Image 1 (cartoon, rainbow, N blue to C red):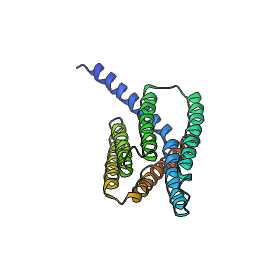
Image 2 (cartoon, rainbow, N blue to C red):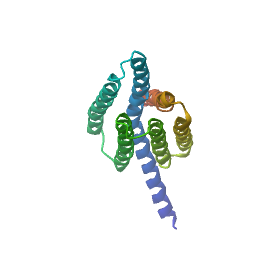
Image 3 (spheres, rainbow, N blue to C red):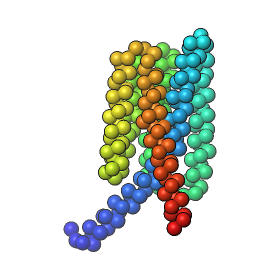
Image 4 (cartoon, rainbow, N blue to C red):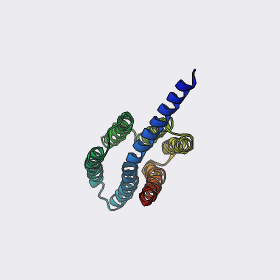
Length: 202
C-alpha cells in the first residue's frame, strides 16, 4: 500500500468519524427526552395504580409516546433543514427507529396480555443493549468504551427484570432509562453547548 493510499484511507476514516459524531449529537435530544419522560411516566403509572386508576395507565403511555414522536418529528425536520443529510444519519435513524418500534411493540403486547410482563421488560433491556452495542462499533475508542459499558448495563437491567417481582420490572427500566439515557444525554448537551460557545468566542 502506497503512502498516498494510506493518506486517502485516513482521510476517509476521519470523515466517517466526524459524521458519526455529528449523528450522535443529533441523538442527544431524543435520548434526553426519553430519559426524562419514561421514568416520569413509570412513577405516574405507579401513582395511578395505587389510586386504583390502572385503566388510565395505557392511555398515559399512549399519550407519552405520541407526544414524544410528534415533538421529535418536528425537531428532526428542523434539524435536517440546517445540515446536509449524511449516510450515518440514516443508519442511526434506522437503528434507533427499529429499537423504538420494538419497545413500543413490547408495551402493546404486554398491555394485551400477549407477552409475559417481565419478559417484555427483559426484551426492552436487550433491545437497548443491542442499540448501544451497534452504535459503539461506529465511534472512536473513548466513546466506544462508554457505549459498551452502557450496553452491558442495559443487558444486566433487562436480565434483572426476569427475576424481579412482577411490578418491580418497570421501576428497574425506568431508573435505568434516567441513569443510562437521561443523565449522559444531559451531560453531552452541556458539553456540546460549551464547545460551541468556545468556538463562537474564537
